[in-house]
Image 1 (tube, rainbow, N blue to C red):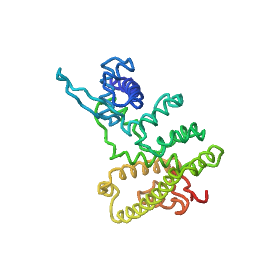
Image 2: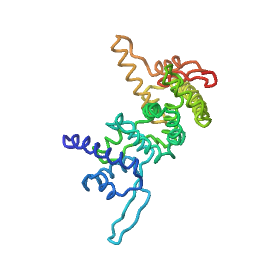
Image 3: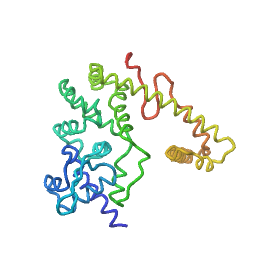
Image 4: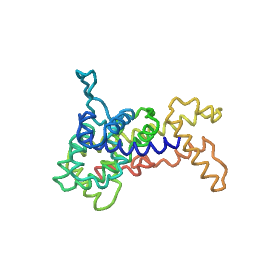
Length: 302
């Protein structure tokens, strides 16, 4: 067990080194990665296997050689780009040139951000784009903990069905919507950049509509769950939920609220209490979507 714990972080770092290289040098073979990075062959093959198991790289071409071996070419997946930006140990020191190349090679994943990088440079807001992209990837689902777990165990980890479009929408929200809730010079400069590009502005509007609809759906679902609780024990309720991710989230919220109640010397809340509290503290419909997302503005009046 101790050897496994020591192995995980070490292999994790090497995997990140390979991921960083492959993100701007797509369609590379393991031999090509070895040659470019000067990592030894066993390290490269181990790193590629881990990244593939975690779903962060994918095979785009296979060719059987005369020797009988199969040569594979790899590319970084959208989840790999997210993982790279979520937890790269030297992210703040990544050069502008690297970020430009990353945007160029992965434009298909984020066309309204990576595809606009030259526009950001022309308006001299490349640094702001860099910072808001970093903010955006921290609004989406965690891809890093799964990679670390795979590095430790070499077993694929569940992702709750996280898809490319989920990451894309959540990053767009962090980059094109959340900044409208800020009130400082940099945010105003960034918002002018969005306003002056029709595609960026339309994407921001569409994301706001999506989040509003998502919020309404979430509130309706909470009310349904409260109705389901009538005559049910809490354990029976959790086992009856088809949405496993929602069940896990409710368990975590209940644990947090009960721990806080114990610290404050208050009675422990029931699950019904917790659900009612979530609805009670949901902000007004028109301007806010609540929780980590804060206020949601009307872009035409902002």
